[in-house]
Image (cartoon, rainbow, N blue to C red; front, top):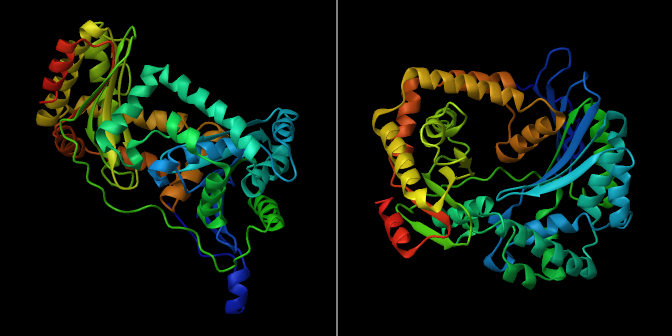
Length: 459
């Protein structure tokens, strides 16, 4: 990671407050891969990554708000608001918003997570000004009318129902509740039928005004783009809406804090008439700011990150007990999760759990051999680069990095951090993370005797 001093200076302190500050965070080769940040008066941050060789651009706005910012009564409000910002502004109807991007072959969407929300559009480079205008208009000028709230309520309830019909997806929400309990990180991003039905237009408007001012937003743009042109277009859009009214406002800092999960040995079972039992076995992991996350990434890849991983080989290749089996990590600002998922016939759930538990215990106690670690490092390096081959992925990287870390890391720096992981680093993080007593979440048609035995699986 490299940075240079500000390119914008002011002659007086009063002028300094009104001048945008631009920095080069990563200097690319011949302009390719150069990442710049401009902070506007009013606290809005704009980051871009330039790739002159492509003909597309992805423009996104990240909001520093997710489902963990909701009270119990507001559970689902962040996601509800994501839907409503597509329903119309003073300039455009909902049809105008979608038709504008469709007319140029663009793609437009949004997603809500536990700690952030993102709205984005991917277009040809020549159509970037249109994408900027539409997305900025949505973020700053949404009407949030009561009739739109009522109409969209039905669509969100259908989305909840769709998730409930997919136990392979739903089990991860159940696992979050198993690990975090009844606090914001343990609640579903979509909310529940009861909380969504209880949300009103007035409450959602107040939530919008609180969390969508410029200090809580990061604009990210990647592709064949000119940084200064993007800054001018974004600034014009936000100034026209009156959003940059406080020149002294400063961006909110990345989330911090320290949370310790105390959920060892918890078991949650949800009976469903499904063909498979869906299982997540896991324990507390590492926060996204923990320097050991690189070693944990290598460990995760070796355990359940591909066809050569231990869990895939033991559960699927050697025994044929599951079609889908993998491990994963989730890092939040102050804590994290490590989990193993498997979908199998209900009669096989205990065998699958025993194999997974034995593998985790074996690696926790004895570590991984060097050849497996080397293979995992190579796989992780390759997947990291291949995952950044389109402008959408690049926009996600720079936007999330700015919002969650407040800094940027080049791809070369990321690869260096992965390559620097040693076998001892992996073994140490395995002892700490995998040595913890696991918790368990299961969805499926489980009989009473099976349910009783599942509690023994985490003893």
